Image (tube, rainbow, N blue to C red; front, side, top):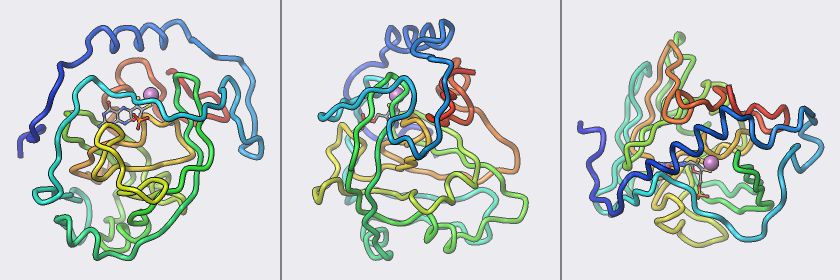
Length: 221
Ligand SMILES: Nc1nc2c(c(=O)[nH]1)N[C@H]1C(S)=C(S)[C@@H](COP(=O)(O)O)O[C@H]1N2
Ligand SMILES: [Mo]
């Protein structure tokens, strides 16, 4: 499959990518503190009430009628869900906070979608599967440990505050991994690939930390 098959508008923001790489080199926002998740606002973060849009400047238009999500790699039951099949899975409502590495946090987001644990139960990762790479329609990729995806607060979300997630925020379907910086939460996800070996992805090979825990400020690395 082509890595990138949905129609898009906009050009990749090379300047934005270069300036975020420079942030990583300079260690911008690092406070040297660390805090336990019991402290709601991680070190170096400020709370915002709006919801900023951050992406590579490319907004793919993903028509739910043509939408497909493939989960493959080291799994016993690879699946490809179309939109109706995705919505026919058990649905969960989960509330969580967003922490973006650029310094903003947004509390109390209500997400609806399919629990990561349900997806894992369906695909049955092989015993040697330890890592995941998410592939998105804008060509973006990001990697996490399988155990981070298997956390009870992780979901594939289609709705936010009871309404379909807007296209600029990754609709019709995006990943939400609340305990990692938000770059680990892929917008416009189209493929979830299970791997034995880790594969650092878009920001992870551009100076950003592989693990991305906001409470220990794993911003850059
Ligand atoms: N497909 C895709 N997912 C992505 C990104 C992206 O550029 N493309 N940017 C990441 C980054 S850096 C952040 S902070 C969040 C931003 O999500 P938002 O625009 O809904 O706030 O999406 C993450 N997921
Ligand atoms: Mo980000």
